[in-house]
Image (cartoon, rainbow, N blue to C red; front, side):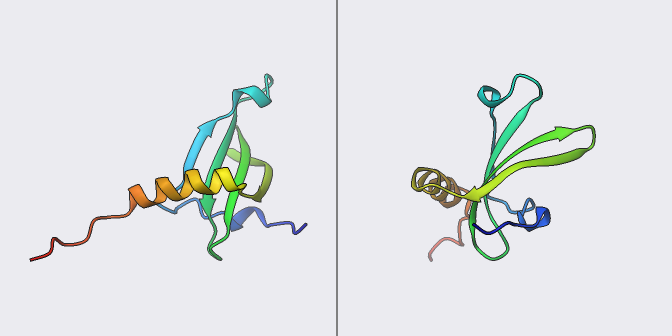
Length: 85
């Protein structure tokens, strides 16, 4: 399994899904994100926020179900082109 640098997740991408993940920690707030890297890889990232830092807990390739969810969301976020004349 390849490890990924913390900066490789493209957080400024328009189509990133972030959800709270309360079932995996009672000690601190956790979140899950689905997004695409600069290299077009689809990633699932679990993270927490500690003071002013984002602490990555886990990063992995998306599952089939996560990919489907992300692709539907990504299609909805695409800007509409100019109307046909």
